[in-house]
Image (cartoon, rainbow, N blue to C red):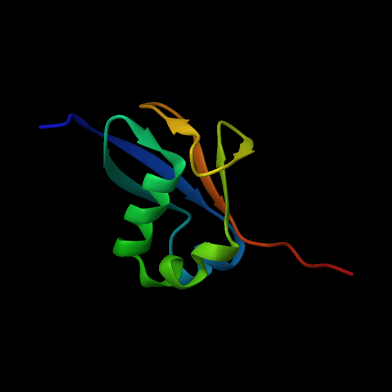
Amino acid sequence: MLPRFELEVHLFASVREAVGRDRVRVSVDAPARAADVLEVLAREHPAIGAARRSLAIAVNQEVVGGAHPVAPGDEVALIPPVGGG
């Protein structure tokens, strides 16, 4: 059985509004990647699942790809697209 660990994920803007909280906790199997965190979030929160293709994920304040490893204690954030004018 793989060891599991928990991460706190920060949610911003429309994702925060859709979920109704600015942070959520997820439990993932080690070793884990950013894509694994997003997959768990998408299953647990339908609003994230619906928006997942347009979300950026940041680990320790750096936007990363899905293959980026995550570890206990990492700061993870979901960032929706930003519009402006």
